[in-house]
Image: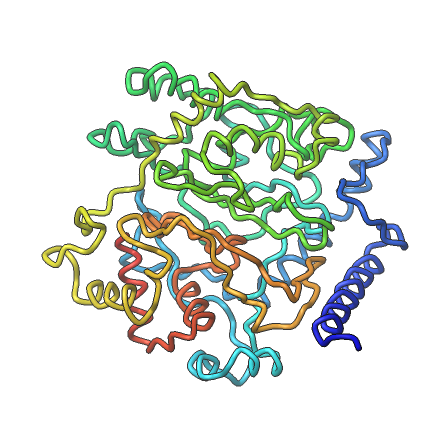
Length: 471
């Protein structure tokens, strides 16, 4: 007799193969017969001018498809909180932006079981995995403001000819971000409002850093070949490129919202989008990499340019120009600088990471009670840095059926284990969740209220957001 578990596995496998087949059918460039392989299929060499013309011709369709999805999911209007600002003054976007299914409220959803929501198809689409703007290929995609400033300062062009960044600027982190150092808190923002590049780092940091840290910063700002930005004929930059630097994504040691895809899973259709995390506070973090297999920032730095830079494919890395960093000096120096990147000041918090009652508002104090109580937030996000340095599986797949979203399979297995990010300075680093699917802190509260079944009231949700804005 065949067990129910084996039947269930067979059904799940068949469903996944059907989804993959549907994607293959939608993409005429993909072989009609799927080939199982751990490696990326190398792009056939052809004259670059014809390659450029062929690939760039698809860009309008790619962009239109992605923006249609975003507008269906979210209210993308510019509605800032009149009182909440990031460290350098950019307004924080306010309100829940995820659109609800017709005829249902947030309270009604919260009263349903995951099975009811799944069966009725009522899980908000903005809570589903967010695909890469060009999911069939992935790769690094940069916001236009980062592209423009980098080109202005260094002459390097980070523009791709096949796709543009998708999330509107007003939802992204402020640019350039402030830089705070654990070694020199007396100096405040040492960036002085500038994007730090190879053009100005020495002027800004000479006399502040020690020689090893200064060399580490230089290397973090140095471009190296990457999958889409390199010197080969199948690159995605119009002109041959020196590559990208660590701080092209982690601008000023924080984040500019640049996106990529996780390199640790195959086939391409199940690779999830990555929202660039900030490097602030890595000195207190203990898990790194998209699957958190790396235990120090030095490990992460060493392997990032061999893995994430080339979609986790060492064969392609060899072709395009992998950069092998030396552990004892280069990696050590880069790690030493990253370890002194501090969180932004939080003047309302005491030495234990809790609100000082003499400085906080009544609403913020109520929000703190929700955070450490009914909201269950502190079960993972522990004070004072608001992380437990662990992985947690939220099993979001309880709420929806496996489906294809712009070429991304949202599988029945869900997102898997997710790292607990540190919430210190969280207002500075939108968007949220590992793939950036949550545009605002209000969206984040609604998401976890549903996923964790905490049944917060409308006022409790507002109070919780007010508290997180103080972190």
